[in-house]
Amino acid sequence: MRDQMEGSVAVATAVARCRPQVVAAYPISPQTHIVEGLADLVRTGALSPCEYLLVESEFAAMSACIGASAAGVRAYTASSSQGLLFMAEALFNASGLGLPVVMTVANRAIGAPINIWNDHSDTMALRDAGWIQLYAATNQEAADLHVLAFRVAETVSLPVMVCMDGFVLTHAFEEVDVPDQDGVDRYLPAFRARQQLDPGDPMSIGALVGPEAFMEAKLLVHARQLRALDLLPRLSGELAAQLERRSAGLLDLHRLDDAETVLVGMGSVLGTLQAVADASREDGDRVGVLGVTCFRPWPAVEVRQALERAQRVVVVEKALSIGAGGVLGQDVRVALEGLPVEVHDVVAGLGGRPVGVSSVGALLHEVLAGRLDARRPHFLDVNASILAAELDRSGDRAEHGPELERFLADLSGPDMAGRVS
Image (cartoon, rainbow, N blue to C red; front, side, top):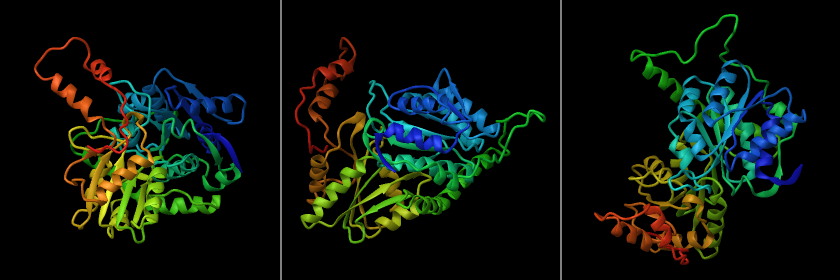
C-alpha cells in the first residue's frame, strides 16, 4: 500500500520488516531519522525481538554489528560522511570476516570544509573496503533495496551498503509502497549464520594471517563479490515477482535501444538525466540513460553490453578522485576499453550543488556540438573566477587567516547554470 512518507521513515520501516536482531545506532545527519525511526519501533515493541544499542561512536556501531553478526544474529546500522570514515577500520574487518551486516549510508560530502549536503564522496572513498554497494535512485528503490541487501548479504556472506542521497532522498516526502511483512518474510528467510561463535567453545576472530595466506583471504572476499554479481539479477527478479513491481538490480536502462549518446549516473540524479534525455528525444537527438545501481561489485560486462552501441557516453557523477578526476567515469572507461566510444567524465553536484535540468541540458548541448574534450575531466557549474583568484593569491605570499574564509568572501553568487570547465 502506497503511503506519503519521508524517505528515512520508509527505510526504517523496510529495515524493521527484515527483522534485524541487533541495531547499533549513532546519530549523524542526514541518516539520524532512520535510526530514530527504528528506535521508536523497538520501544513500542513493533520490532521485537531486537536489541537496540545506542553506542558512543560510529566505530563502536560497526564494531557492535561485527560482534552481533559473528555471534549469529542479523545486524544493521546506518551512517554518513565523516561517520562512515570513522568506522573505516571496522568496515574492512566486517568484509574480511565475511559477515553479512547491512548498513544504510545517507550520502553526504566529506570535509574539509565542513559540508552536510549530498554527494557521493563518502561511499566512493570506501569503494575498496569489500562491501557490496547498491545506490538508490528514489525512495521506493531505497526501501526495496534493503530487503534485497539482507538477502544478498546472507547468501554470499558479505556486508552490504545501501546508499541513498542525503536530504535529497532521506528527507524528501513522497509516496512509497514499503514491502509488507508477509512479503518480506516469504522473500527473506530467517537468519542462519554461516559462521557463529559459541561461548561453550570459545575462539578468537580476526586472527593474524601471515604472507602465506593473506592474499588468499583477500581473494576470498573478491570471489564472494563476483558471486554476488551473478546472483543479484536473479535475487532482484525474485523480489520483483514478490512485490509485483520492478526491483532495482545491477543497472537501470532508459531508452538505450537506439541511443547514440548515453548519460550515465548513480543515485537521485538519474531522474534529472532521464528528463534531459526525454526532452532531447523531442528535439530529434537519440539520447538514453544508464543508471548504475550496483557499483561494487562493478558490473563491467553488463555496462559494456549496455553502452557498446553508443557513439558517446557522458558520465555525470557526484564524486571526485582528487588528482585524477571522476570515479565512476574511470570504471566506465575501463569497461569500454577497445570500443570506439567517446567517454566524457563530468563531476557535478559536490557538496550538494544542484544538478538541474538546465545545467545538464547545456552540458549535453556542448557534447553534441563537439565542444567538450573527452581527454580530461570536466566540472559542471563551477565558478572558475573565484577558483582562479585564490590560486593566484595563494602563490608564494603568506596571507592572514584561513584560505577557505577568503575563498568564501570572494563569492559574489553569480548564476553559474550551464558552465562547464
